[in-house]
Length: 258
Image (cartoon, rainbow, N blue to C red; front, side, top):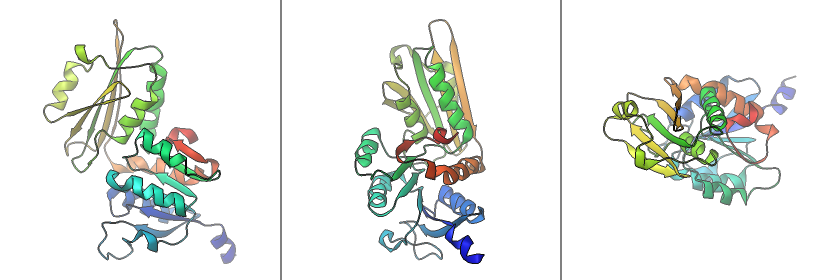
C-alpha cells in the first residue's frame, strides 16, 4: 500500500522558493495529497536549510514550478527545457519573442506553461477584457504593485496587452480617466505594449491591482481587479499543479484549464 502511494506521487521542484510566492507554492505543495516537494531551489540561498542554490544539483522531478525574479527566468527556462519535461512559470520576464524562441526547443510532449497570474479574478478580468475589446476601440491599463516587484510592467498587464487584438491607446487625448491619475499620484512609469499604454506604479500600499479602461466616443467601461493577500493565488496554483498533465507545448494563462 505504501509503495503504491509512492509510485503515484507527483514530484515537484519549486524554483525561487525563498521568495514569497515560492514559499507559498512550497507550503501548498507539501499539504496537497498526491504531491511530493522534491527540492526547493533559489539562487539567492546561502546554505539555508531545505534550500539549494546550485541548479545543477537538483534531482529528477515530474514538474518544475518557477517563481524566480524576472532577470533570471529566461536562463532558468533554457535549463529546465534541457533537463525536465514539465515547467510552470509563475514569474514575469518572458517577452513574446522569448516565448516563441523557447517553444522552438520544446519536445513534442514537453510543457512550458506561462501563468502570468494565479488569481482566478485576474483570469476572469482577462477574459472579460478580451470580450469587451470587440465593442471598444480605445484601451489603457493601470497596474499597481508593491515596491519589491522589480519588473515593469507586470507580467499580468503585459500578457493582457498582447492578448488584445485591434485595439490601441489614444495617447494624444489621454485615455486614462483623471480620477485614475489622481490615484496614481507621482512615480508611475509608462510602457507601450502592442500599441496599448500600460501605467505602472510601485507602492507598498498595494499587493497587486489591475484596471482596464475601455472607451468609445460615447461611453467608457472599467474592469477592476485587486488582490489584497497572496492567499488569493493558492486556488490557481493548486489548479495548475493538478491540471498541468492535460497540456503540452507552449501554453499561456491559467484560463486554459478554467
